Image 1 (cartoon, rainbow, N blue to C red):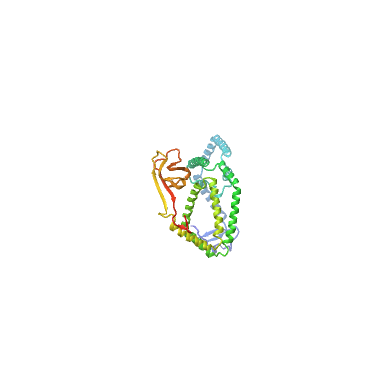
Image 2 (tube, helix red, strand yellow; image 1 turned 90 degrees about the vertical axis):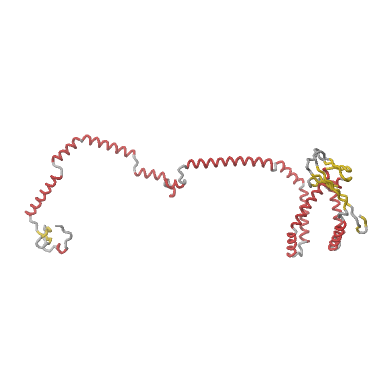
Length: 382
């Protein structure tokens, strides 16, 4: 019978004496404290001991078995001793050879060596290297590409250097420019002074009393006539080139032209500017109207031309008219006006100053400039 729970009321100690034991009483189905019957208890203990001895004899080793074990221990004492020695030797070897936990921890700490938390594991290092199992091949190829590009760039730089040395200004050319600047320093200074004088004059003449509206009007007119201004600039450039090649062939010619211009300027300043500028403008307008009606019309100018096809056999051409001066004709090759110092005329013979014959296919055009001006100005003949 097993007791799963004892009612606390049944464990009352009322009436219990020293040495009493809990005993199940079947008559009233209770557990009570009872005095121990020495004889009965002894018999009970003895019976229990006999039962235990019987159990032990049948279950545990008998004397024979114990003797057998003892004999085996004695028989294998040498083997046990030998195995113990081997175990001791292996323990010593293991202690000196294999890593201890502290050694492993120390080595791992040295390997990490305060690496950042994001790079202190093999997985993090692999991720940082792009998980590239062939990283050495990738780096080798990249280095090869960089090396090839460097070689190409070096070649390009050498080519650019050679081009720059042959194309851009050398030290000698720069020195020549520097010498020219030094030589013309006084002229530059004089021009700078004249510009300052003109600036002062312009500021005092044109800026006083000029309203913003007037300035805006001028600006609008400039914008409106930009195309015309550009065309005039081109014509002035062409005329300047022609004047330089025609009138400025020698320092004397240039000086004569400059002197004439100075004389005319002095005359104009003393004649036209002494009165009302409006009258001068009216006179100029009237003269322009007269000139447009009388000068250089198709009936007033005797302008002719000859055209020659060059066959690469000669530089000499026969003119249709007699010419006494190179400045009385315009010589054009393929539409480009030639400077008078590049050809000569003798009556009806035109000779181009060129050692070799002109190449075939060039178009040579000659314009004759012999002007007559019919009519009279202020009663005088022209």
